[in-house]
Each structure stands twice: as structure tokens, then as C-alpha cells.
Length: 143
Image (cartoon, rainbow, N blue to C red; front, side, top):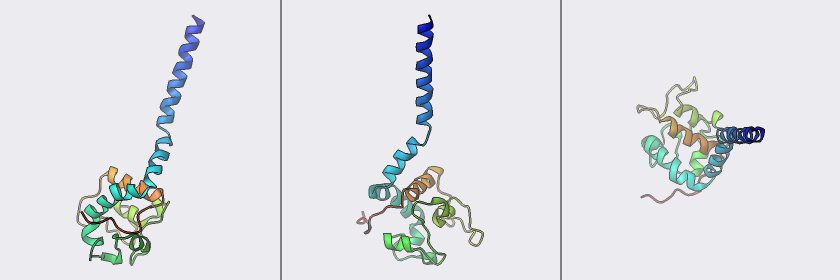
């Protein structure tokens, strides 16, 4: 009987440990690994930016001096300074604006005059920024 109870205890402990690991940062590490690949930007981030920011920050439009069309222009930022701090979502102006968190000097949430991005969309952009904001030097061809 003791052996059975001891065996059950070990199995329960292993199960609890597995659940805790699954809910821990391991999933975040794997997600950041994928987010550090140029394909993550091309397949997930760029479509979000084009859909939600494209009217004002792609093609010929560069409101606020910010163009998101190329890596160079994205990393340069706009009149308000650098929009993305690779590896640091909390200090990236773009992330703060799509979260609708300011800054106080520019309370205009993004996208302007449109609904806030979903939590999932914001998380995708945050993941990308935290993973270093990796993107191809040249934009992908238009489809």
C-alpha cells in the first residue's frame, strides 16, 4: 500500500511540475525564438502594421515623419524620436501608443481614429520588439 501511495505521490509531483513548467516562461522563450526570425516579421508583424498603420505610415504617407515601410525608416523613427527600441517593448513608443498608454506629451492612441488593436495583435508586436525587432533589410514584394 505504501508503495502504491508513494508511486501516486511521485506521479502527482511530476504532473504538478509539468503544469508549472508549461505555464512558466518556457513558452515565452520559444515564442521569442520564433519572433527573432525575419519570417515572424514578414508573416505576422508586417501584415498587422500594414492593416492598422498603413494609411499613415506606409507608402507615400509618413505622418509624424514615421515610415514603417523599410527597416531603415522604421528604426530611424519620426519627429517624436525612435519608435522602436529593439529588445525593450516597455520603452518603445510604438508599443506604448498601440497599448493606448501615452506618452503624456502625445496622448493620441494608435491607430488614430480606429479601434484599438486586439490584445493578441499587441502581444504579437510586443513579442517581435522584445525579440530584437528583427526584420528584413528590404521590404517583401507587394502581393
